[in-house]
Every structure is written in structure tokens, then in C-alpha cells.
Image (cartoon, rainbow, N blue to C red; front, side):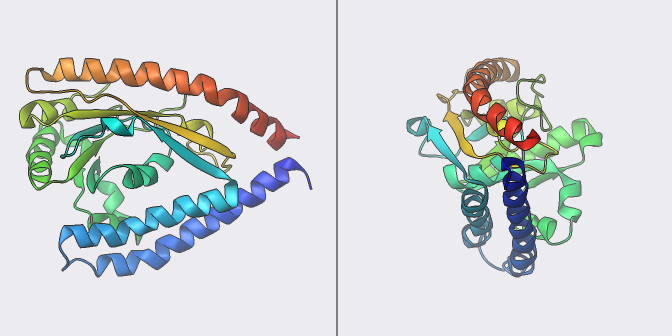
Length: 255
């Protein structure tokens, strides 16, 4: 059996389990709505834990986290590089209970969106402009005040490995107005689980948690500058380390 066929079979098995798990968890997740957030989160995040385990079993794709000592004891705003769907699973295993800034259309997806809605995300209309930023600030401050972390992908969308987009200001404004620290996160998941790619390549995804950025005396532009520079530089380093392994997987897939 060729290596390319093995990759395809492994990725197919993962995708099958991924879809079935959405169906299995979707309805029970909705039924948790009377529970306090911490219990809802504990139950629903098991879906992410299962899929990371399933990914390891089917595709031999795992991850390693560096910089855990930088994770503060209290809530913070996470600025994370967004390259694939993988980090939406892994962040739940790395950080304390969290909510995400996301586009509201995701909540309309049957089963998946219904369960996602139970985690109190900050769901905004991207076309709303200043109204969306105001919603982010108001809801973000409320979530942080209740002990929940806020996850933001400051580039606004998934960006292929090796590419970078300017950081949007919304997350930095939230950090400035709330006074909570920013925790920058870089990784190289896009080399192993590329966006819009069916194939999941074997290997070890590296995640690096950076030194926290204290925001009390910084403006939003300064917060963004520090986070963007660190994430960009670290992501490039992680990408250089990942290329030899993923190039071999690409060669096998074409064989």
C-alpha cells in the first residue's frame, strides 16, 4: 500500500469520526443550557479532547506546548495565530475555560453551532463595523470579569503558513479598555492540517506560549505591535522547523 493511500485512509477515518462526534455531542450539548457555564464547558470541551485523541490515533498527529510558565493564574486575552481548525480544539486543552470571538454565522450550523452557542461565545456581525467592536468590548469585559479567558484570532481569518495579515484592532482595544493582559500564541499547525485540505499529515505540532503583555499603560496600537511582532517572528521560526517533515509527507502523498 502506497504512502499516499495510507495518508488518505488515515485522514478519511479522522474525518468520519470528527463528523460523527459532532452529531453525538451536538444535541446533548444543547441540553446543558440550564447548567452553570463551568459545567457546560467541562462537558462540551470533551468533544475537543476526543478529536485530539482521535487525530493522534488515526493520523499520528500530536502536539507539544512550550512556554506554559507564561500562562498567568487569572483570565487574559489570548492572541493566537490562526492557520487551521486544529487550534480551535487544542486551545481548550492548553488554557483554562475560555470563550471565542467569532462570526455569528457559525452558530447557525446544525449540531456544531448549537453546541458552540452553549459556550457563550462573542458572536459578532463582521459587517457591523463600530457596532461589532462595541459588542466585543462590552461582552469581552463581562466574560473576563467572570473569570473566563477570551480567545481572539487577530488576523481575522485563517492565514496559510508563512503568510501574515495585519492585526485587527478589536482585540487590542478590548485589552486596553479592560486592563487584562494579552497572552500571545504561535504554532505551526497549518503545515500539518492545512486550511481547506482533506489530508492531515503526521508529526508533532509545536505551540509556543509567549511572555504576557501587560496592557495597563499601553494603547491598542502598542498592544498589537508587541503581539504581532512576537507572533510573526515565532511563527516563522516554527514554520522553518516544520517544513522538512511536511515536505516529506507531501512527497509521499504525490507518490
